[in-house]
Figure 1 (tube, rainbow, N blue to C red):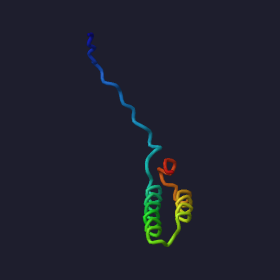
Figure 2 (figure 1 turned 180 degrees about the vertical axis):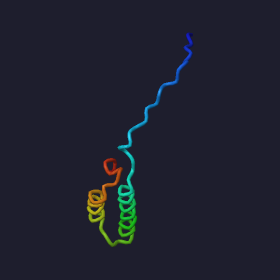
Figure 3 (figure 1 turned 90 degrees about the vertical axis):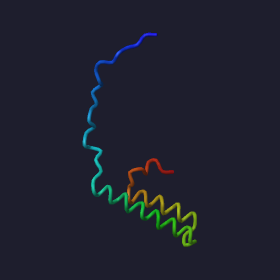
Figure 4 (figure 1 turned 45 degrees about the horizontal axis):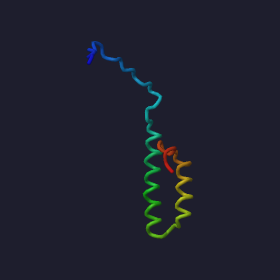
Length: 73
């Protein structure tokens, strides 16, 4: 078995600031999750149907543009 000694540590590069979360982005995210919580409560209480619930969720994703919207079903 051959063992290789690593004498230099790899250099880590800092990612640019283009992916920073702005106050506006954070506010949109909070508003989206609040609306989801209210909508879920309305569904549980029978105030909206399953179809209305799904339609409103789709519109909320468009309106608020949450960061993880592309991953959501």
